[in-house]
Amino acid sequence: MRIALINENSQAAKNELVYNTLKKVVEPMGHVVDNYGMYSAEDEAQLTYVQNGILTAILLNSGAADYVITGCGTGAGAMLAANSFAGVLCGLVVDPSDAYMFAQINDGNAVSLPFAKGFGWGAELNLEYVFEKLFGFGSGNGYPKDRVIPEQRNKKILDEVKKHSHTDLITALKNIDQDLVKGAVAGPKFKELFFANCKDEKIAEYIKTLVD
Image (tube, rainbow, N blue to C red; front, side):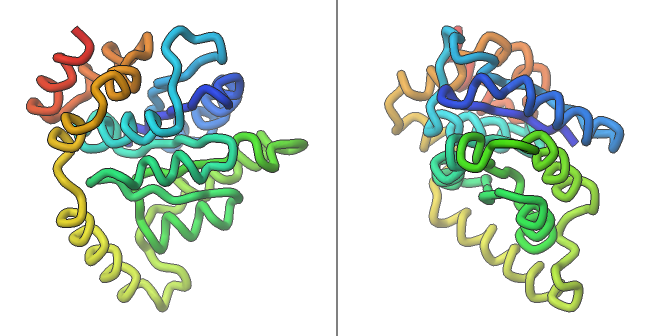
């Protein structure tokens, strides 16, 4: 699995901590981590939590990432922004039990974490345990186990609902302020990471018009 990390401007200073913790947990499981930044609060390319959602949708819908880890001060804003788009099922994860149950019950492809609220002593331990529960036990297996059939059924129903309640990604992006979208893909490593892993030619062609 290719996992992308995205941090917005208010919590960019924590990118290195989150990135190193994520790699520590998931690389031994065989996963790959791509760090899309922001890398520091002083980065020239600034991301808001809204742009986190845009970038999350681009990465997941294009196949450049299989899963996205993002967040903001409370985690709520980035989650709402990500869920504005088709092809994204993002959960708000505060602690390891949230992570485990989101993976097993909702079987999503993105999570948003609070990187300010409650981020005190033991924050790096909480991140480590969250990532272990999120990626270490498979997904969509049900919780409690005897609820697996209705939970899997509801996941499929929700996926189908989102197909009809959200427009396709390229149409959505073209209808958004283009400066906002360009800012979401302006990171210094975006082109290097994205075009090497993108699996959707139409999305790639559109993104080229933004970054060239």
